[in-house]
Image (cartoon, rainbow, N blue to C red; front, side):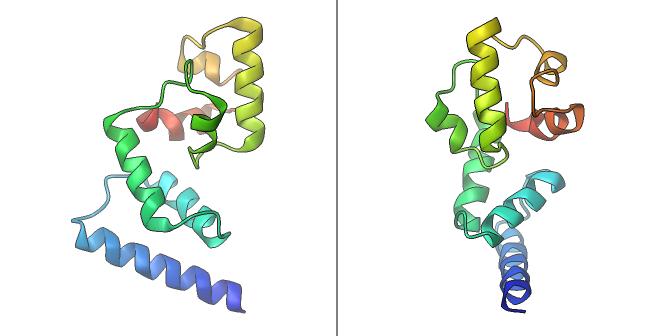
Length: 118
């Protein structure tokens, strides 16, 4: 019961923050992932939104980002990060979104949700 209450509070707070800031420019799918991360206690919602909005202006280069930089990106799972690092080590730079979708743990849908940030 408490978990649902916390989630509702987080969603309400996020909605209030978005309205106060003139609506977030983040894609809906990204917002859902950030809400889930905040609900799990992974990070502060306001910090997650600010980080992702920064990525909209300065996208993350998946070919040069360190493990630490990739781990800071809340839309990537530890498995996806490990797969990407292994892929880069074995095959070099990822040259397209289609190639990224071939990396273990990434699907075309996942790549589409990452597109604004990379």
